[in-house]
Amino acid sequence: MDLLHAVFLAILQGFTEFLPISSSGHLVLAPKLLDWEDQGLAFDVAVHLGTLVAVVAYFRHELIVMAVDWIKSVTGGPRTAESRLAWAIIWGTVPVAIAGFLISGPVEEYLRNPLLVASTTAGFGVLLWLADVRGRRVRDEHSLGWSDVVLIGLAQVLALVPGTSRSGITMTAGLLLGLTRAAAARFSFLLAVPVILAASLLETIKLVGQPEPADWGALAVGTSVAAIVAYLTIGWFLRVLESVGMWPFALYRVLLAAVLVFVFI
Image (tube, rainbow, N blue to C red; front, side, top):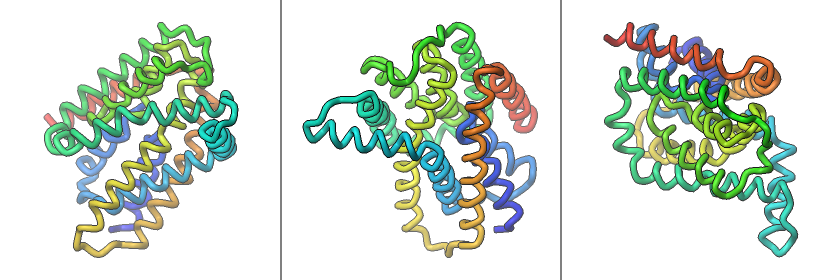
């Protein structure tokens, strides 16, 4: 794999993974526009590993406190705000884990049509804007109850459909439940840790059975670049979110959908 291609795709993945703009929409469009061959499963695993490193590194202090408090809570210690948040992330991951196990194969086979990606990219972009406009934005992520967690977890299942955007749909659900923009984003990012970890493990298992030799140079570049770009993107997004809101990302999604329709029809 050409290293310049690897760098470009890693930047694309790192930038779009945590923004509510659908990374799958970009990855469907980029090879078509640039006339590149498919990057392959190994590279997908590498860049997803990079984004996982980024979110863990960015939230490392919160994750350590959550892990310690969660362990204390299951060993008879008191429940704290951070242990409750850890439980919320665990239970919020259960619906997508079950759905992914049951339907990920058919989704990959039948739902990667570019026009479907365009439809979900635009439709869920409009829903994101409506949630931002209509949401009360008065709660933080520590206020989430079990019903809230279940609803966000069920919303995350929709992200199995290409073009939905995992971060976009979970932020939309959080906003509809009254979270502030920053709280919806933080919970979405924390919820990404087990999801990306599980997806990377599943992709790695598939990769083991493939006979093609790995291009370790491209994989190392992809992982490193995706990690750096994703880390910077998380920080930038959280800084500007409260002031700009979701409308620029919703508008961008609609424009991206229009480009997808134009290119593939």
